[in-house]
Amino acid sequence: MTLDILYKQIKRLAIFLIGISIVLIGCVLFFTPGPAIIVIPIGLAILATEFIWAKKLLKKFKEATLTISQTAKDALSKKKDL
Image 1 (cartoon, rainbow, N blue to C red):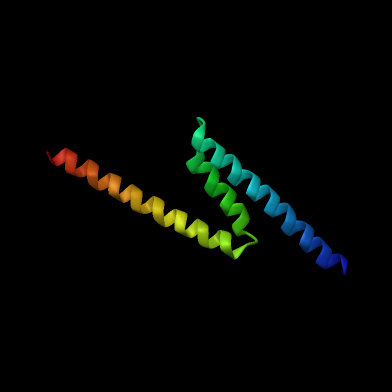
Image 2: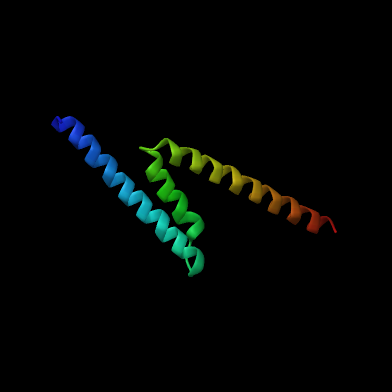
């Protein structure tokens, strides 16, 4: 195993540990007062720098939040029309 490969593996492990830690903190924030909706995407973004599955999950998260946001905007505009 060369030093280059070892460096890449250590970097990948460090990114994994940091990203998973932030995502888990975000999950805890769902049940305690805190900005879970902000912390979880940050953790996924860190993981997405090295892992394809995290990039796909982050994309789904963005799509879901856009859908929820649009639904909320539509509901507010209907309420104003009444």
